[in-house]
Image 1: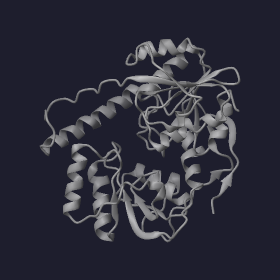
Image 2: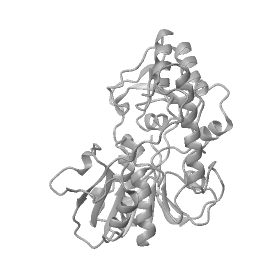
Image 3: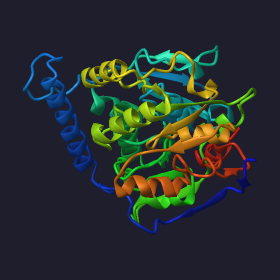
Image 4: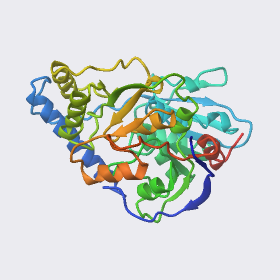
Length: 375
């Protein structure tokens, strides 16, 4: 049974530090870049990429565009969407049915966002679609009253942060995934909509300039509306996380190989395991006899019990009524703390991961009023 509790709506201050880089985005970006250089160097050793030994080039800035709809009440909410992943869309776009203000969504051109289709929505080209400063200056003068994103560490999110600073309007950040110490820091003076009290304290990391409200997870709330209808498939599926910069591949990949070989589990690669080094590891795993799961089936429809090192998919399975577990040999202490914070059960425990307590309202309905224009 899913446990529920009432939403906390009073902004609170943080109590302790949790992030490796709690305030400096540049420090966090340097760490990210260092991990990327390491990945490229390792991939070069396999002989599977060109230009081996050269420093990685910064990716070109994607062209951005605007999708808008009119409102029935004063105000305009500016939303940044940098990814079409289910978690990012749930975090930022689930508020749309509950907003009466005008809405402008800034996103990369060509991004598949089905929430922005229909007669109410129109597309508007930007004057300078690849110039962040020009975009921020343009939007800051267009009557924006609040901004919303999952953070200011990606292109569109960085621009709406700048718009909030220039226009002097509130900046709202929505948590879209489970938090590790390597999460990016929050923007200055932002208001966080967190999954839990513990996550709010962890991500705000004792900073006095931030406030937070616990609203729950929209992604997990939606998963709970889709419980497993049939029987549980007892064959485990191990969720891949080779793409993650948080752990060395010897830990994330090693755990997957050991678990799949010892239990006969299927391996389900993460959608972002498309780089040369991940493909090489996949080839090695298949040569070792490890079977791969069919990734054409959405994770939300998988009936198998789920195992991972530190994936949100374990929590998603638990709220659907499917056993979820975590597994790693000699994990770093931050991983153990992560397991404890989210109540994740290790493989071999007497009981699987318990469903997290869900707030008794859809999180999007709690976020919309804070933006100033609830329908």
